[in-house]
Image 1 (cartoon, rainbow over the protein chains, first blue to last red):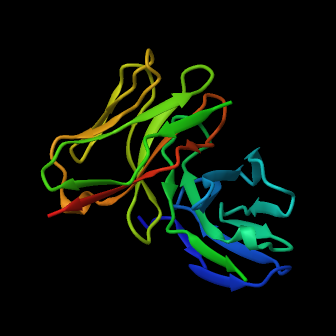
Image 2 (cartoon, rainbow over the protein chains, first blue to last red):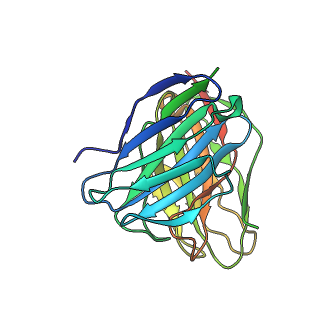
Amino acid sequence: KAGVTQTPRYLIKTRGQQVTLSCSPISGHRSVSWYQQTPGQGLQFLFEYFSETQRNKGNFPGRFSGRQFSNSRSEMNVSTLELGDSALYLCASSLVSGEAETQYFGPGTRLLVL
Amino acid sequence: GNSVTQMEGPVTLSEEAFLTINCTYTATGYPSLFWYVQYPGEGLQLLLKATKADDKGSNKGFEATYRKETTSFHLEKGSVQVSDSAVYFCALRRKGANSKLTFGKGITLSVRP
């Protein structure tokens, strides 16, 4: 079974631009979560989607948004990019949403904002 | 709030040495606890987990026991290999928080031959 895939793997943008990242979960998985990883803040939860509905949201500004499609693929969008948005963005999927579920992570999208 | 505290790193060990990486947590109720590993240039992989007090998670020679009385979930391995060099993250998932994981800052382990 194919793992979680994320596209693109690397991205360079300039301040003020917007960016869309994509995540394809493992086949059959319906929950997708997004995390931001930076050297300073570590791994921080962005949001979780399950069956096209946002189930949980972290403490990020409204510039960060996401959505999930009927095939469970998810996208996250960051508008008006800031230098501090440079990070590795990780997507994780699980069968359903819940505390006992194992999350499987993708390789991440590395975003550099200049 | 919920938080995870990991010991400061990095950690450098010789091959076949004993490994302990400390992890303590603060959470309401009894969360599920996890150890994830991140190899260079890759995403996170689940190493092991425990979902209730006194549970022991184990995988690939690594072990961790859910200690409610000390709110700890220390990771141990009896004999490390060079291939264990990676970043290790302790994490918790609070009951009712759906799939949200709260991570510690991670610790880099380097194993030299």
